Image (cartoon, rainbow, N blue to C red; front, side, top):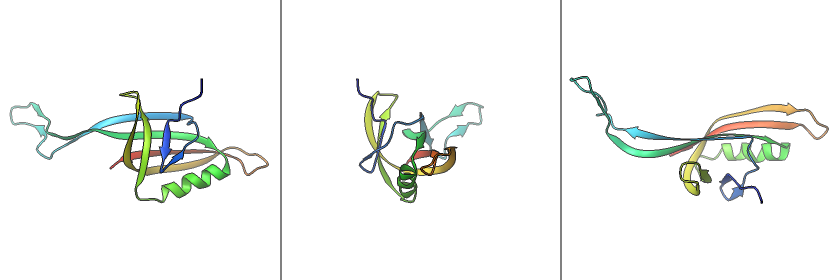
Length: 120
């Protein structure tokens, strides 16, 4: 059985990630909070906002491709939603881009790249 692609960013299939962590959150209105009676009131204005924390071990060529994606203000991301078990597409941006040398090689190294994809 062939492996599944977890991420496609701006039409480019990403390599198989070393880690893939998807979280869903809600956006609450300013009127949310604790009432005078001491109970919690939640006024949800948006539900299921996606954040994906991902890391890869990549070649220098892929490091360059990922660095170019980081500079874009808006990305179209097709991702594997672990909640619904289907592939979905959302508009996102990259935050927290980190690189480190995983292994020195004669071909400019193997690099560990990690970042968060946040939905707009």
